[in-house]
Length: 426
Image 1 (cartoon, rainbow, N blue to C red):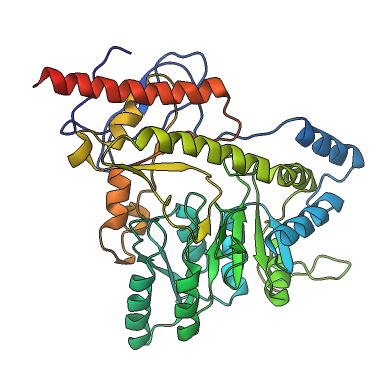
Image 2: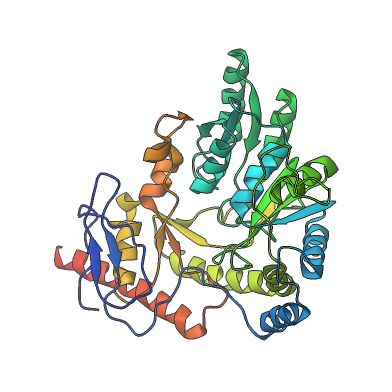
């Protein structure tokens, strides 16, 4: 690398690296800065690639040979039971995605068209889309600056205002962020005081815990994701977790096109094709056996980032502080104060992209997304600052030692180049 580090006053480019060789720079637009894709490289270092091996192959092959290919079968039944036992809930419903779990969770909790559903603005679009699928109205709440999760004080104030205005609040969706559970110890009593159910968006947090209780066990129901980039994967998939037998039964019914239990095809309401296949459940069973191993690997990577940035004033790992929680280190989110560093996170991302190292800006707040521009938002500016100055670093448990070293060397090279540039300018 022979380019010098850009100054903090130059344009910043969020980096969404692709896996194909060759340089491509998409122009900036009103939606955001330019996207940088790496130049010619041998192999990319992925942000959070899947971690699969012989055990997964064994389970999937056995499922194939059993003939159970459809969205029903012994592996699906076993996977649901094993996840429920791991999290400590009574019921688990395997579904096609985490989004499907959010959607059916809201319906199971009784969310109806016209209801208000409160959620954190600092999240992925799936959280909001599930609300809109129900015909409900999202209201965005800003986040805590230390964790990026839902701000309990702002939640309470917003709930009070909405209830004073006689709005029907159908649910609250706290979002577990980058593997860290939301502050349910504070959120739960607030929700209970207002009589509002909680659907926990634990898509990113399987294996994490808060106050000794696993992520996915908080709230009236919870949704987890098994997407290809998550802490464990079924390629695509999700699960609804709950202790409420009626919520689970409702989700299971709606997920199978709401077919009535009769010999012919009878439907008295609209359902969805949301079931998880037995093949993918087999993959999930193998992944679940390795979950603790994969979490430990991600924590080891995070510790190396923490050691490196501990000597860089103006940088921090989002959510790292606090002893009353245990996260799964799904991603390591770096937050930078450019007034102290002289550079910003997206400049680091652009530098790493030159060596085909994938990084990604932290979530763009939902209240800034054109698709949800008309939604009510109670914001303090925290999520916007995290988006402007945050970057997710490669965190996958399948990263090799050579790949981890390549990332760390790239970061050191960026920091060294910045120091040399600063020295040259006196």
